[in-house]
Amino acid sequence: MHNQPRSRRRHPIKLLLLIPLIAVLIPPFYNFADPGIGGMPFFYWYQLAWVAGVAVITGIVYLATRSRS
Amino acid sequence: MIPKFNGLEFGIVVAMFVIVTALGFTATRWKRATSLASVEEWGLGGRRFGTWVTWFLIGGDLYTAYTFVAVPALLFGTGAAGFFAVPYTIAVFPLVMFVAARMWSVCHEHGYVTAADFVRGRHGSPFLSLLVAITGIAATIPYIALQLTGIKAIVEVMGIGGDWPLWIAFIALAAYTWTSGLRAPALIAFVKDILIYVMVLVAVIYIPYKLGGYDVIFHRAATALKGATPPASTLLAGPQYLGYSTLALGSALALFLYPHAVTGVLATRDRSVVKKNMSLLPAYSLMLGFIALLGYMALAAHVKPVGGTAKAPDSTTIVPVLFNSQFPHWFAGIAFGAIAIGALVPAAIMGISAANTFARDIYRPYIRRNASDREEGLVSQIVSVILKLGAVAVIVTLKVSFAIEFQLIGGVIVIEILPAVVLGLYTRWFHRWALVVGWLAGMGLSVYMLYVTPGKTTDHFGSASFALSTWGFDTKVTIWTGLVGLVANLVVTTVLTLVFAKLPRGRDETSPSDYEEVEAPPMAMGGQAAGAV
Image (cartoon, rainbow over all chains, first blue to last red; front, side, top):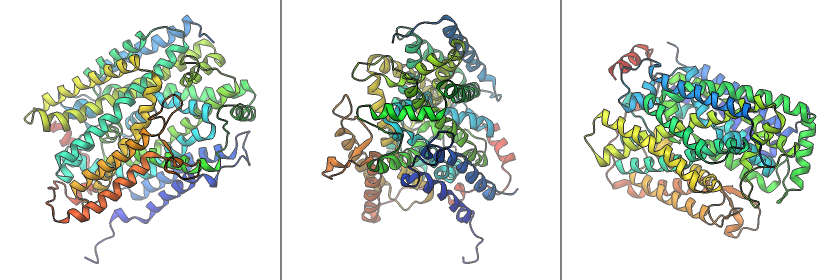
């Protein structure tokens, strides 16, 4: 049983998915007004920027874990 | 302010509604089904949807008209705390990506249409499946009713009296959903989402331009929030942290447990479509974030909500009022039409998925065991109509604020099926009767906590944010009720699984490989499965 190929379920790249969770679910990281961008406080543009961040990260994980057929 | 009726605006909204209704009826012929007379065809579109259709369908399904009116209304009323919708719709995709893929695989292998179908097959417990079905339906009904508040807000702002527009909209919706099933909202979702994207793009550029930039908007919003009762801010206060993050996390965990979200996932053609969409769907979250900021634009433009009572004005009207005051009538008409159509797509999917759950998991196992596929499909169609018209009746007879409170409860109760469904996708360690008692414990605790939470105008069921001071803690901190209920559920389920070790376990009809990706290209198999229907 020891030399079974590593299951796709345990792919280490999946750990990347934790990054956006930590980044947006802990408000003390981003509950500030400065620095603002174009009049938008940090609190707002930081979270909006993570929308792009999560798209990139889930995209990488998708590409890395898809089956080659 | 009394809203003024404008003929051009009204004409545009009516024209858009007529076009969408026609689309709904033509959808029957889309993706060429030979017959719609089964839950599989009518309620899942034959499991044929590819990446793009799914993107529009799930997007149209999850980001509802309620989102467009309620999220900005939250920022309008409570400031930064209302922005939780953004971290919520960010967190959901990494959380759900692989769970949804496993769900797709096992449901495709065994022909499951609902989460309750899966639970019955996996845990071998028709009773647990019944609990999951009832939970899903109970959480969905107020959600359907709530879609109407989006339309109602538009109707009020356009200066049209009476409830007849709601009846007409939902009767038309019920009619084309009857004939076309899930294909109708899938096709309409294209129109809806393109319109909404245009509307948002114009709104977030044009309105700040008219008001003097985001600088002015945030500045004026902060001033207005400071003077509100209770005072609020464009940043979170320390005691709001826990409430903000638990609400975002809990809502993210709950979202894909709703029957309509499961339907969206299961209607896809293959597993990679599901996974790929988890990185494409965040585009909607970006839009949602900007829509949320419309709440601050409304504060900056000194918008006054219409409707409701003097004590509790109907703040869901602020976005339509803002559009009416900032946009020329023709564009306000397009925006209103977009929001109204935005209510119909999710309402259709919710009706279909709740009806599927009733037909497959309550009617067949408990009312008529030997029902044919055709009969099951017909029951689903009938229930879907009843749900929609029932929702209109509820909204027309009850106060709207009442429905919003019920929606808060929706997420809190639907999360209680997480152990049976999501943990069930990964392990069979949990005992079926432990899951049942765990559900009872978690649900009991959550409902109790909701009951003792007062709202602005009510003594009970006022909010899904539970004040820890209720339990004697000397703090202003709140926590999302559903998460406390979920933890209670998990603890009870785990302990009882150990206690029940000797009791007989249910038969599991699935095998470990059913959950994994198929190694061979799925093309040929998918074609066969679709042809066999």
